Image (cartoon, rainbow, N blue to C red; front, side, top):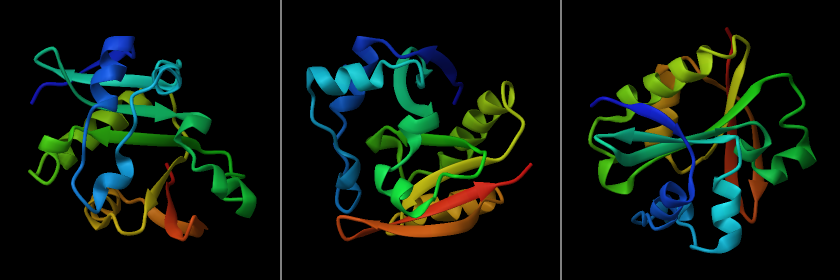
Length: 155
């Protein structure tokens, strides 16, 4: 699959906000609202397209952090935080490695330090993928009884 990165626009954000994941991944479902569109169209969010269709997105910085992590100092180290999402119908089909490779390449074109991400601990598919890329578990914290894992890749 060929990927391209585009600045997030309203149409892409509306498409992404309509994605519906099956349980247990429904944690990642969103509600379409003006506030949600404004959040996704911040400069830190990028849409990933293939054949001119949105297949995923990524964000960086504070937008990629889980707010509860600040309470336990999870984001104190100087790292680039990333968050990402793949369209629900594409998950679980072996596309993760190619998709994540593309995102890391995009990030590395502008940033050379430590990369950090936060993942829900039930998301074993994502954790396995990140470990393949040499991300290591650094910290865990709870948010509303859900455990999150902070993972870091040093370069």
